[in-house]
Length: 624
Image (cartoon, rainbow, N blue to C red):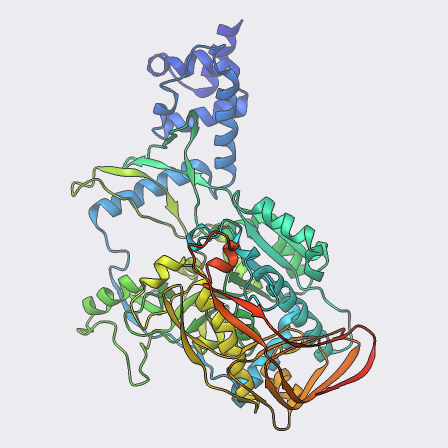
């Protein structure tokens, strides 16, 4: 009976006798497989993957593992646009290009694209911020959070890390509270009509999915309705063991294909296959905003950036910061091909300089009269116009132009040190856009928009002097610097910083100032809430939690914590002087200290503070 089933399966496979005899191990086991699994087996064999079956034992031995193998192959096949056959085909092409040393930018000439350069606090900036808040209720936010904090020296998920330690607010809470503040402010500004809930999507991975869900559930979604939040989990992709794109078997289990992450470019295919984009369009949304997991400054830049997209009608708007020539951050570049096509795209810093030199710019990537490179620095935050995005994804299924980065054993480039895989980046989305697409950028001051937390203390301490550390230490200090500078622009006298060294990194220590997004979502908000003659000393700590807190004629020299419900109006002024909070140094090797503190190199010693809690509606005054 089994032989008859196997013969029938073979006929379905259209495999002739000679071919079947060359795959006896698969042949013997075919009767175990469903018709769909037989089709997958046929595809693998046709695509040069028969090595996957060479070790298969007789029927009756490890049958469960054989079926599990096809369950995995089915997942890998369904989660990749075009399936595994397409993945193998693209891999062969890219591996051949890599072996030949082909330049992906061959035939392209770089030039500086058009975009908007904003200066925080001027009238232009304020105008774009207002337009952005008005438009925010027509946006959906997508957080790309597939990574763990291992590179940081933190064993949790990155979004659970405190973005500042005065209040202990984690990155995810800050992001959600910022979106909720935008939602509320947008509704207030446009008045009338139904209050719209801004959709919030988190792309997770096998590494982060369960822990992200647990973080949300254990904190009641940080005040957001659970129905507003959607988690989309990205799958990994198959590893490749050689230039023929033969799939690599898992060293721990010969019945599994080895897999690795595909990169954050998967967010586009996940959004497309989820159907969310069509739901959003039906709900009247116009924008999709993508952002990364550990940039605590980002929402200070987002309102004005949405305003630029809405005002300029950009299909793609990349948030950017000024970059120094040759700085290790990609440059946003217009590339024009000899055949006439062009695109505006991120070009990695190690490719930009040689590309410029090869196309008539003998000095390569150099600073212009502004002291910065004319090519803005990409920070991987994108705003896409929804209708144009859907039309593009209809063509591509969300597939993003990939690259491969094999580590070869030697100059012959015939074998790899370890398996490789195809990778894709979210910001490569514009590579397939038609010439009619309106692609631009918005440049913000670095101090306002960009302080990612990604390097552990040891790596950060090795960064050449003058370059950003991008560590937990520098990330938190950047929050205090930005808030101090914003208050200065709003008319507050804020003392200059002092320089300190934590975990081997020299940083500017400004007064430690934080506020909730509902208090100071935009510069106009901050400016409307501080008045008179206010000053804050360098050793001070200030935390403002509450929408209607007004600071007038305040002299702060110490620690002040104000916490009020939105229905309370609190006026704060007078002279507040106390022993305050002191920054204590912590050694990152000191395992008696929690990881999230250790990786910063400091903690607060709370000696004395003035606290005001308003839990009832009404008007209150705090005058010291």
